[in-house]
Length: 271
Image (cartoon, rainbow, N blue to C red; front, side, top):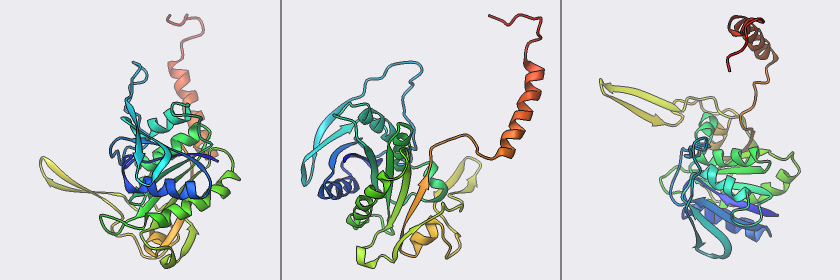
């Protein structure tokens, strides 16, 4: 299978090489297209004023350590743009599937909204490709067991191809050797708060990120990860709210607004 590997930590980050090596070992045709530098937290942003101008992006071919035969490109763009360019055929035949990561740090709960790793995977889904976003749950600043996460990501490729096109799996793996994992679990997204704000003084606020105060135990992605399980969660890109009650209320509201703002039948609309 032809697989695009990308990330938001930058093309030289160790996680992207680990993912590519595992996928090549599994027999896949891999191309790496990733940002030239770290763009963590970029979500699915483009950084391009697409409605006003045509942008020219700079890229270069690079060679990653121990991957001399894998085409790799560093692009001066955000992760979602790297995916869009690659799937448009800018770096060879478009991939069948996308793997985003391995991110240095987990992407769990509400924070998936802000993750560049997840944003790249969701961009792939909007373009009709299934994708896996992979995060390594680091308990220290420099995690080391990227190969554990890479092995799980490679093992997910087969099952993912059996799912509908555009499926996105968000996978988070503890920074442990495989023999120390407690297992792999399907998980819900944690609903714990991610942003913690403290007002310092009249001109400063302190913002921290994380899941401080999250209760122990449970079956969400944060709690299971804290118990040394790897987790897999199916997520989706933005779509209309599926709640019929919400849609009915919106329809009623819009009908009232239309009655107020629509031009009268005998008044021609402004050109």
